[in-house]
Length: 153
Length: 153
DNA sequence: GGTGTATTATTGAGTGCACAAGCTATGGTA
DNA sequence: TACCATAGCTTGTGCACTCAATAATACACC
Image 1 (spheres, chains in turn cyan, orange, brown, blue):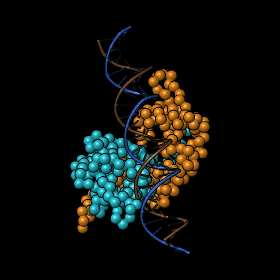
Image 2 (tube, each protein chain N blue to C red; image 1 turned 60 degrees about the horizontal axis):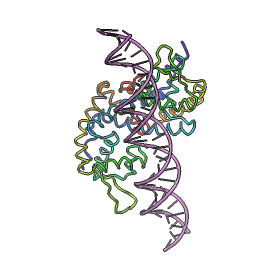
Image 3 (cartoon, each protein chain N blue to C red; image 1 turned 135 degrees about the vertical axis):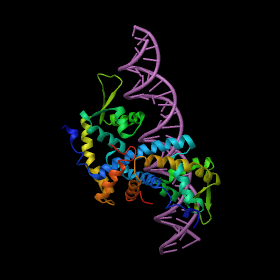
Image 4 (cartoon, chains in turn green, brown, yellow, orange; image 1 turned 30 degrees about the horizontal axis):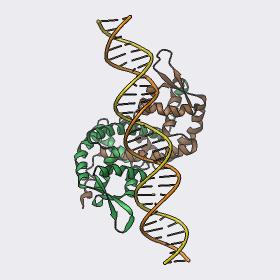
């Protein structure tokens, strides 16, 4: 009955959702990042960038658009792509009609790398999430996360 | 009907949940962190640390335990507490029965700061989440996030 | 055509975190 | 008592990201 016994029932659902989102994110990213890094030398954002590019038309995207999709700042994208370009997975392409834009273009090596990595990585993601959530719960999670700011596509 | 037209229906729910978790976290964190920083000079983890300590018995916790709750490494906690100690919000306390442990002890100033900040911050969290999610959806979110690794209490 | 504003991208500086290595203290075992 | 494995914590190093400032191009407007 001390000071810390207050609350649990009073904490707004939004706040509980927020802290759980924080903790769940921290835990899952730590696990998946470590694995991705150890097995393939990629960070989560490296992987996500390759993935997003592979879904884009002609496997390329304006850097600003990539930033928007990955929820990074433009400067974050510049640094991210530095690494991927050094590894030969992505290359810069210029836009003929607008000299400001530099496309991030997935290379063949990048696509190959993605195919090599994605199966195992998706397996890890599924193992992590499907271990404790039923298919119905996963669908719910997808659904409600889609309504959280930034969670939609 | 191009290469990128594959998939949407085929992507496993676990993977869609994972990417939405990533994006939602990045977006909400960015917003809330910027606000907390601008208005009170705290990071999200600063706030969370104060919050967790305030709920602990005698307002103090072993650093290792704090690390576990915040999903940080011990070294991360050391650096986090450096800042909070410098600001006078937390102080080190030693354990009489085990000289290895150094408690993180919330100071009066820390408690005051937390009370000063929490109302506004909770308001921001609620505004952000309640804007697009109904009470029922929020409860669902709490429920299913609780089953994601790290999301439980 | 020239000017002003918006857009795209990069760079420099600073921050927050992880990993690995190292220290001290504890507790079991012989 | 001596020893050794383990626990708690800190430090050195490195990485990923942000913010603020900067440069170059595009485009609307007069």
